[in-house]
Length: 318
Image (cartoon, rainbow, N blue to C red; front, side, top):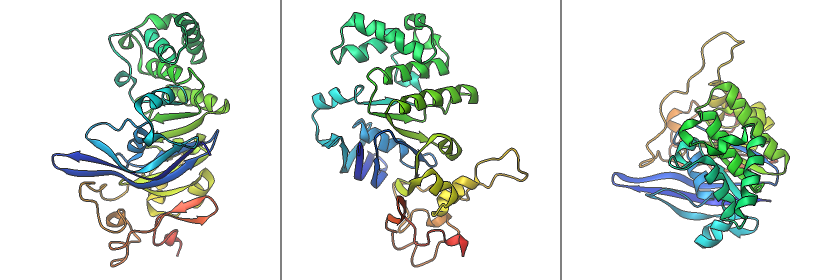
């Protein structure tokens, strides 16, 4: 086991109330495994990703739980200990590299810095930086460019090059393809898959469950700060047990089939005051008054490796 997250909860303390960004989230990622987290905006996917790195932005706070990476709880480490791990053993690719790259510095200086802060001599780091750019299909002269001189896809490749510097054991990719066209998106996914082939485990965040299906080993479905289903790609796609998972699958457009995309009725809840019971019950076609709106379902294993939090798992089948 490379990473085990136990009962993780993250709250945001805002002027208008406490936003329960993630509550009671538990899962694990094995070595060399790709796990994709899917769900609508605000479901908690990125919040959990930031918590793993212990970089939850203010006014957020990790209020409970453990993040055990190689038998060490990252939430109990000092800043110096975390600095040794970030960028070396755990790397992160952000959705918009313009928010993670310094616009006033050449990208080469930033790639090199990732290595020099971990003790690599500058000349050696510069040569390694050139090799990394070649790996992500960019010419070495791009090291002398500023972020604004590169396209979105090129900036994301720079971010991946930085993440590859030490062949990390875990890569967290927080919606790295959202703002890119489908051709560039596919090439970025190929680069991440190449990292996995070298033994890196992947925590991938996306809204697109079809994208998750193409590359992942497992899929985790989140809704309103809760993990509602977790299993292998085959289990999730061929035997979805939570009505929200089923709705996400049915919302994927198919160019080869007639008919409209089936949208999920209603809207995600306000996490300052989430619904009682199951948080999906106001939008759920299976919801039963007095049960779903009153009792929160347990996150339980229904079949080997397949977990779900629902009072009526697979209930639409009769």
